[in-house]
Image 1 (cartoon, rainbow, N blue to C red):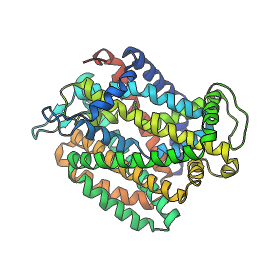
Image 2 (tube, one colour):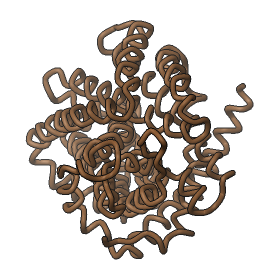
Image 3 (cartoon, rainbow, N blue to C red):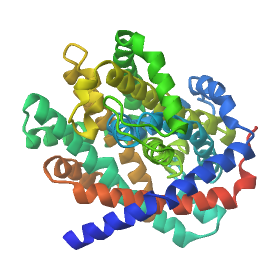
Image 4 (cartoon, rainbow, N blue to C red):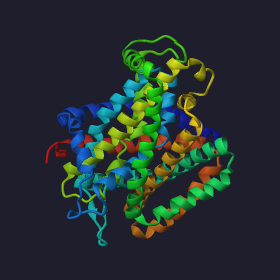
Length: 436
């Protein structure tokens, strides 16, 4: 097993230190220009997400589909990922992360446009869509579609399930001393109660949970912004300068080059919003809509909220805290910079711990639907019950086991999912319309 882990780690270093980042950035840029900066329609997408769509085809509202996507992407990457980006790439990594989020909106739009265009209607009246359907019906490649669906199924058990439950137990055991076994059982039961109800149940919960936890986290960050108000403009200035100029070691920051800042900022941005992986299209295909353009605009806003807003404000909070309290980040792990910033608040570590648990629970719920759709594609609806049972068991397993292997394998699976999905975006680029 150790040799397999070393091999997977080597493959991940090879893929994620260059090829995958360049491929995704190239795709983001290409679709941004081809769609004539579709990002400028983001506020239209936000408005559309709140409109009723009862008379159109689909199972869930546009807002429910959006929040399901956000539930899957708003995870520990928004907290820990931003922290490690700053620790390894310096403050300039935040600007590169932000730029990646803006450009990635175009890729999310393209994925969701094709996902809805090629979605299929089952006999029971439910819609299914996503890259596997685009690969089969758009590219006429059933084998590639099957491979993508299998990878999605594996990813749902890994990054969508085991790693999230493990994060929950790490937080609850360190802050409150709870047993991982007890928390694992509770997380499995709570998630099971939601996912057994299908997309309607998942969507209804996500409509309430995602806005609430997002508002809670942003509110806490805004309190920190007010507390650090004297350091906010210097922090933004430092972030912008460090993105394009080499920086020396200052205060709590490591020294970094432009390449290092870009590498870690872009990588974290790609991991947090999943633009290019294609999973957003799976949720978008369930939405009540007759127009791929409309729902693609709505789904595009998930990348805006996830990376541009949530990760952006987290980065500013981290950098302003380091400028204000450099001693607070001395000799701490790279993943704890956000924790150090929240320690300025009364009970700050508990506030952040609650946010991490809420984000991880949302990801458990959102990713369960992605895996379910992969099972439907591969085995039909008869496989759903078995999938959900194993998913619930994996929540408990992830809560009590060491997951170094699962994390590494999940990174590799993400890379393998990107390749066929991005291929469809390039080949079917002429079918993606930026207007109705």
